[in-house]
Length: 326
Image 1 (cartoon, helix red, strand yellow):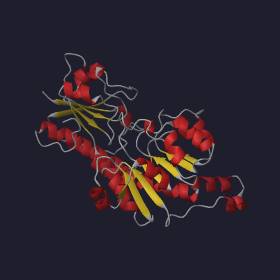
Image 2: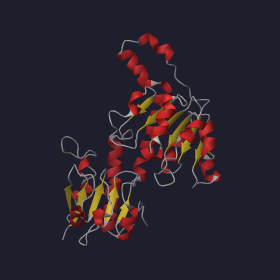
Image 3: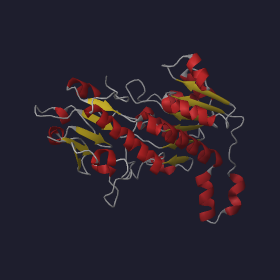
Image 4: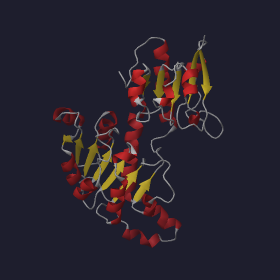
């Protein structure tokens, strides 16, 4: 009997081709013992029917809940999450059912770090505002929108794990100081990575640019709130590339409205897609991207390859490097 692998349908592009290219799929297609199927593009959650049909699922946006795997005929053995975040998967429920959950931290490390720099450069140069000046015939207004140089500035990193470490490394040539908040890393570990360990309050007070790269959990949900914004420099920017709920967006809106911070860059928001009538849309000093700033052909190929490798290694009884629910 063949191993049945379901692939998240939202990974198909408008031409019904894999958005990560076909090369990564060859690892599955070349196996006589594996049968792959594309799942419904429109599902928001893995259904019990899916869990009873597939031995493995390569999962992108749909969630995986306790209800997804509640039926007695559930045959699902592994969920390979496309990307580094896995808050959309009920880890406790999967562990109870002995379903392995993996992610792809290696494939996204460099792309997300590059995305962080992209956001920093775009904000510091006021790129989108200057683009609008040209398009609206306001060329001579350019002297009113001076950018901010970085060589004397301090970069603050919230969450200095795999991606944070890479961001610190890539940012070193541009910033005068790099500080980081991460309760799981020691002063020595952060120093060796190129950053000074500080508490969250000190990071808020000293940073000119703040990049959020931490996981979303009960401790970090709403962590960046009114109190945090009140401690930031009025000239500072905050950038979120982790998960939307880490920031209390109502408090962010107040900070932007009152100009108590200079601006923000959000690749993630609490509601995705972001509603067109969201208050966040009304500020010119914020850059909004659709949870995809790091997406490139290279990034997606590498994510798919890493995710598929976890599935194959499981069925070949080889070590799985990226299991998140041991």
